[in-house]
Image (cartoon, rainbow, N blue to C red; front, side, top):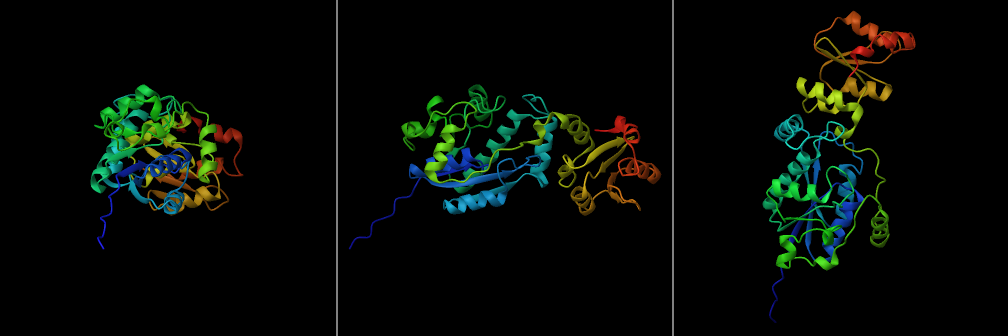
Length: 312
């Protein structure tokens, strides 16, 4: 009896956030008989609006998809990412968000991983018009070109509305089996989620760089020099810049614990009921205790107002 050789499947790498669109992208690729692997890129200021790394692992494990995790919140990749944020080539949105530069960075990381694992196709869950700055047709085309991936980013959810990719031209995938979703409505995606029995998180929050109220804070703290630990503090507590000292005041018990356990800076805890403060730089302890008192039960609204000029 002659043993038949197994036919090697074409491998695709899906850039995977864990949200519904990227989950559906994996299912659409699998339906075309592709060997799909997923890449979750952990960014320092993502607010986990879709899911956690654990949630992403659970979904990919259930779909028999190998998950690669690239941590850009520390080391060389964090340094590269912070430099990108400080010096964007393509401008910012209404916050401190350089969305185009960020997407190009993600594509470049995806290109590196695809080469490493031998993936012939790179795909994303992007939908035309879903996000005004980063997912308009012109932006999508610019992003892939600047990442050295012109016509090499497959977007199954909106493929029929976009120019053909190299993968479609080569016959590696069937364009007609993809979709033509446009805009911010998620009705089609929700119906598909029912079809594939996908449980998905409700979108909430998003990238902290997009938050307008954090714009000034990012501007000041990036100049000061954020690292793998301090970058985690952007959205924790009340922030004050007094002379050259950076102070972070816990807003509740949970935030106090975060500040106390971070093991960087200097933690000052009062000997009366009140918030903990994490201090970077030199400042008189007496002044710190006055700040703490203002935000404790001993303080008043008028006391707090005296510190408004130092808030960031």
